[in-house]
Amino acid sequence: MLELDLRRRAILPELEGLRAAKNDASRSIAKAKQSGGDESAAIAQMRELGERETALDEQLAAVDAALQAAVARIPNPPSPDAPPTDTVLRVVGEPRSGSPTLDHLELAGPLIDMEAGARLSGTRFAYLRGDLVMLELALVRWAFERLRPQGFEPVIPPVLVREQALFGTGMLPDTEQQIYSLPGDELYLVGTAEVALASLHAGEILDADALPRRYAGFSSCFRREAGAAGKDTRGIIRVHQFDKVEMFVFTTAQDSAAEHERILAIEESLLGELHIPYRVVNIAVDDLGASAAMKYDCEAWLPSQQRYLELTSCSNTTDFQARRLDIRVRNAKGGRPETAHTLNGTATAVGRTIIALLENGQRGDRSIEIPPCLVEYGAPAVIPPQPSTRP
Image (cartoon, rainbow, N blue to C red; front, side, top):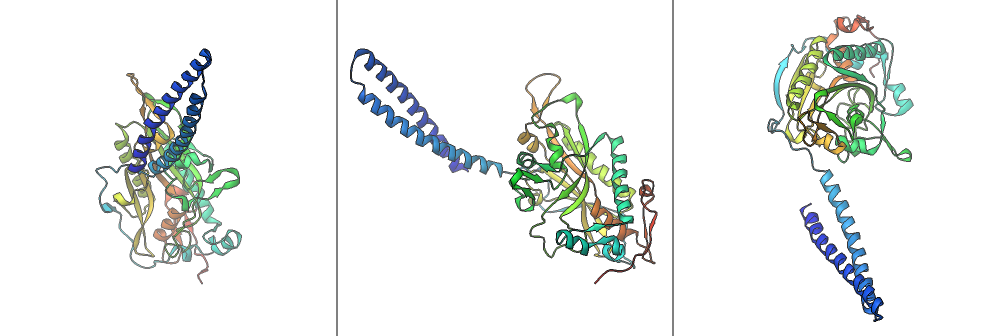
């Protein structure tokens, strides 16, 4: 990238010199015509300068394109509080270790139909049926009801977006291998509602007095999960289509760190109400991705695997996304608008939350007890034992 910048800096003064020389040649031609002299030498010089200018313009365009592509791959600088390795901050709840410890497919039986999903769409697609449908809908409604008093406006955004939306959030260029595209329409399927929510105020100048602006978006999410073969691919742990309620916040540089902690506290309160044992992990610098300066994961305990699995995540992307999407903040005291800060966090990743609820709520007779907070929104209090479909 430095070489490209040096090349650009070398081309610019040469171009300026050529344009000045062309102006001189143009004046020489005009004078020659006025005096009746021979302007052929000046015209030849003008032609030569013009050819050189065209060649340099083409070189500059190529260098600028390469430089912009290189700059686009520079990630957000990590926060000083982002650790060199994943660091567990706290463990909450007692991990279940006694029997039974059946996995979610054994417990759900025909309520998760992987075979029919594969026949319809290919591997890593599933039909959810019966009580699990009511459980999903209850999870979504419950999440919105908990988020609205926290100042989050419910949103159902489009799931098909243009390339600029993915570039703006840092998904491009970075995670191309995970994204489904519709080339004929120049559209992409989102892997998270974050993509659409971030563009809600693209190109706008927001009043500082109206911040933070908090949104909770529900969407289906689509990911290729390229390169994930053999890792968490049983059942619905890692699928190509899933539903999620995502929190997204627009705020100021001064308030973004506090807002990050606030989002994490909301995620923890939701997990606590669901009675899911979990731990909070401060994510290492190398795993932050392109946009996050700092990220926390909440990992749920899976009894069947006797380990923790990522369930929610929240990131402070500081000014990285807002700069790409041209979202600024106007201070009430005046002065030039400043770049906004954006943050995102998972309220509920529906599929993985269902897995955690099934496995942690299982009883000795293979029935599953559902937390009362979800029953209030239409989930069954108990999912009865299901016939086994395990091969």
